[in-house]
Length: 61
Image (cartoon, rainbow, N blue to C red; front, top):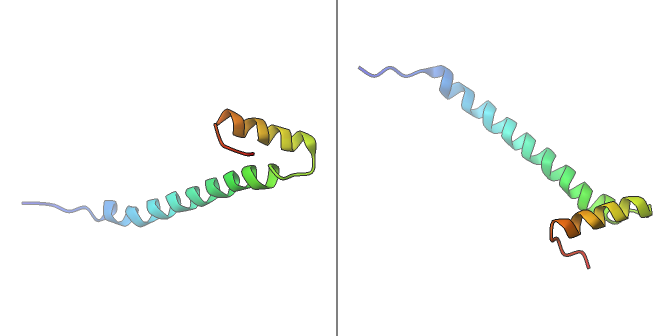
């Protein structure tokens, strides 16, 4: 006889929504780092983002 647990099935939608929220936050932070800081007028912020892009082999110019 097979027994099914409803607790495991009920937890799946919540885990998926938490993963989507985490992915959206990570994407937002990454986009801000590439675009917001990369095009900043402050030389210190721009140079930090520029050096990070070169370290990650991201073409920036």
